Length: 504
Image (cartoon, rainbow, N blue to C red):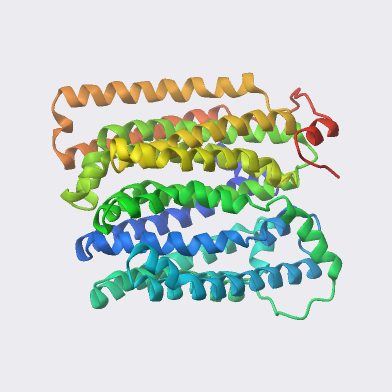
């Protein structure tokens, strides 16, 4: 352990900063997810499933407006070499504030139409309060984004995870008094409000009138590549809720949404941690594709080593997990949970490739894959839901994310010369460990260990811990210095231009 710490965590090298940052963000996320997990266990026993169904509809409708006017100012600040300069910081803040206020105005006006469409009159007030969260997010100190760029991850973790934990606690307290969906809405809004306060406390910034118009143009140059990207992402991630809202009751949507959120919530924060660490990392080495390849392969290997065995245990223990965590009635959504777990693992791998595109200043290269995923979800969700029921919506999502990931892998070969033969080698050990996990689950089932919910879940947790220990030992044993040379074919600027990108 001492050797691992000295090799990977000490010093001021890029590797040390990434590992220290990942550790800090991981600890913060574990604390947050533990509190959030406990909140969900409590609230599913205090609130009716209808409350969670209404909350899912509110978030979907509010997010629809949010993504229509995404400007990508914070991503541009991290990617741009001048992102730490005062002119760019001020420009980014005004861009995010203007976007947030515009979003709130739209939602305020359009909320009654969404309420009429779904036949729930209370959606109007719920949406108008929930969307205040976007306003608080837009008002956050841009210096918090600069802290991410400069890899000061302790401040980033304190802002993100601290705000979330406080918001979760507020939700729990309110649920004892309100006993309805309003506890969820106010708690959701308070998370970003507290993040906003923390951002100015930990990363001080004094708003002022912008004077550097070239900084706006500089940031907008990156933002142009993101035009339409967030809309497509929204279609991919929220189509299932929109379709199910017309086919099923809010109670059934509540069962479905809480099952997939059990998987998606930790996955979302894992992707956030990776984005906050990998994005600035790849941005620092955007002119060294060989080094970027080595780092990307290591990250993919670590993800598969931990993710594939966990996926096996989710498949064998998912039904019991829902019953133990939420209650017996949530067990009907077990198939949706397993499919969501598969989709989430591939989504994490997909996000890693996306960070490379963003770091290269080419977010438009990510757009084709997202467009394909959005199109497939639109085409497949309704027929698969009608054929298989609630879990058919997650099957559509899984098919779409597999296709999107394949397109991403093909595209990244042209950007940084990603080596597919090396990528295939990273699959061998994770699949071997996963096969051992499958055999262990089959043996436990034949012995009757997995027949009752609580022993089933306990076995799954112990199995995940065991495979994680094996994966941890293997990963650090195989680590090499990022700076070691490795022959990776480079691509010319012309190849990137032919694929729809641009390099300066």
